[in-house]
Length: 523
Image 1 (cartoon, rainbow, N blue to C red):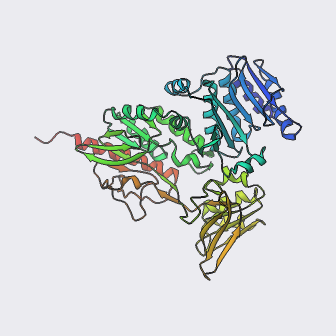
Image 2 (image 1 turned 120 degrees about the horizontal axis):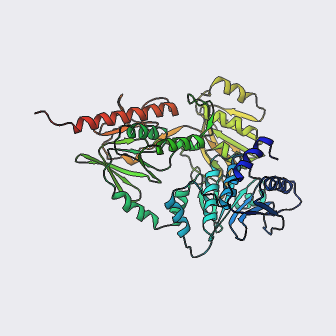
Image 3 (image 1 turned 180 degrees about the vertical axis):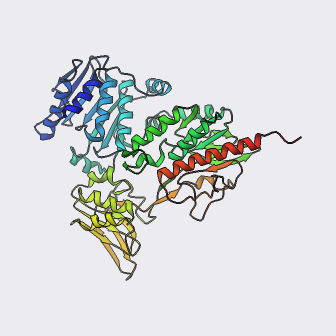
């Protein structure tokens, strides 16, 4: 199961266990159970602090519990946690064994202090190819280790297909709390805590509003925001970052192979590296904070957050990025996460053996179709234009696949469903005007990005007709003291490396602004 190199690495990690732990497996005669048994046996052989029992009584088989000996921790995997989830398994083993988590002390105390009226039983439906799922699994596992009133099971939908069908799970990660839907998509520890600890938002808002004004406040924690924070902090000025989620859209990116000096990485790792780099400096990072309004009051710029808090700063850098563009057709919103999805890498395995459509003929759309073709029964790619816009090499690969059909001049007009899930898609042939319908189970939308600027309405910040922030060569906007960087601006070519450069430019521009506005008047 584990090759020699992986066994050696895992053995080194397990030497950090401080207390003995126990693995309790619930197995049956399926081949999947044999695989789980094999994995657990190999783990036990790597540490004398781990024991294995196979008399578990969990109704999901195969599954296994990780617990400290003499305790009853609510950490379970109904899965063979390899692939993206192998790290989740290693962390669960270490944390159950007393190894301290790399989490802020106040978050640990907040988790331990939770006293719900009833036990909080979380279920996370995931797939091993999902790069968003580990964040959720690791956060909930940690909560289950720290608080005995919290239970969590990570479930591989491929092992329990009938339950997937019964619950109509069409996207991962899908999170349930005490049997009811709780969340969808990537969620970090702070976001989960904010949803269950309802008093935390008000407490945090009061703390944020009490902060002294910053010299530079960066709104957004993606590559542009991170670069701006590093460059500003290195100038020795008071720097803050208010981010809805640190890493931004990079967190939804699977492979990164064009960032100079880093031959290959993935979005999650890159986002962690961004945050760690910023934390190496004296930067006040305020996560889980969504900006809702901006105004200038005297010499300060005020940013109002969704929590009700207000942050003040002598200058502001807007780096709120962009999000996936919607088709804006009937049925899209209704069936989002019920067949309409935006991440082929995450949700593709849930459509194994089924028919799906990909909307969009650019690089993202064609790459998605190629990826899905290896998993699903059939892919129909629909492109609004008269020809695909993807790179030629991608188009050649696409056309070589036997289970892919390409439709150009195709305008999607409706996503069809039966009230609970997607069952088809309607489109118009733009050349003939004819209407057509396709029976399918999933629609993967890959039609570009829209800038996150709706919150700037009435702020005085000038926007382009496409809603992007207009900036000059220094990153300056139409409002003095307000700068912008990254995908949210009019600068062309939305690439990570360009966003990083823009972030640096905006920080240097803001610093120059601070120098000039604080200079003493002429005698």
